Amino acid sequence: MDVQQIINNASRLLKQKKYIESLEAFNKVIEIEPDNHTAWCKKGIALIHLKQYEEALKACDRAISINHSYYAAWEYKVLCLRRLQQYQEANDLCDRILKIFPDANHKHIWSSKAYSLYRLEKYQESLEAYQELANFDPLTDCYLFDRGLGLETQGKLKEALNHYDLCLKINSDYYHAWEKKYILVSQLNKHEEALIIADKLLELQPNNAVNWDRKSSTLFNLQKYRESLKVIEQAIKINPNNSVYWDSKGVTLDYLKKYSESIDCYDRAINIDSMYQSAWANKGRALQRFEKHKEALNLFNKALEINPDDDFAWHGRGTALYNLGKYQEAILSLNKALELNSNYYYAWYEKGRVLDELEQYKQAIDCYKKTIEINSEKPFNRKNKL
Image (cartoon, rainbow, N blue to C red; front, side):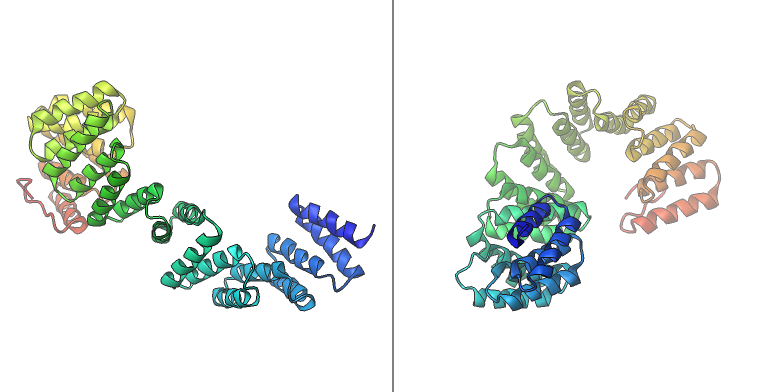
């Protein structure tokens, strides 16, 4: 078998992801022809896949020393430096490659440069590099979006947000990037910014009921309840058979103290989807406004049949039991709510009230202290007023 046949066989093994076998084959070529730059470069590629980055870097350097014009070896050397997290060196090498090979297709070099600059926290320069990359690859915005998704799954929300921003600077009408940005900004409680994004989503897709619901939710979080109500009604107008929208309208009406109207909305939600747990629990809360504690208890029980891990429903159940004078049962329900959400300050407060009735004053005071510790801006007095 001649050298070219061995190289072809080794390359085939590389494509088949048989990296150890391909490495052995490239080593065999190098034994026969120590100055075969192709074999050295592809040996480097195999080593990269085997995560032996230092050795891969040496192999790429050897290929370059044999044939200074072998572009692929330069590309893979950059990749080695990235894998070794030597981002400054990688960026510098990208600049060198751009000068040495001015007429080459630099798609991967601009990609590496943009990524390296991002990791160096040089965000403006990184954006400029991504914009250059877009000249070679029209899917650059998609690449940035996909990378943002990957970072999100790793829990790196701020990094993901940066990638969506980069994506939008390249393509300002990328709907899904705006959508993901809205979700992350909302999770970070940046509601003013979320409202601006919600308007952009509506500009791009004005007949999408989800976008009206998003804007309504953001206005609700900003305590603009009347505006929120008008907007959720737009979502219902587009899609009147969505239980979530009716439930959201009910909650908004509840905050506007229109309790009877809110109950009507919860009933609409339940009629559409009898397994929509939130509507059962919210209706229970609304009935408590009318002192219908026994009926409310039944609704909280129904909600918990559907979802036994809902802290809100356990809290509501505990409150209903308290109002029915069933203090020991109330404690058990409130403890369950706190087991699910240890920062649920309403549940801590209600537990304090129950302990008061049981004349367990020290424990009650501890619960009130915990309430204030969690949310010092909303201390309760004994009359349950904020």
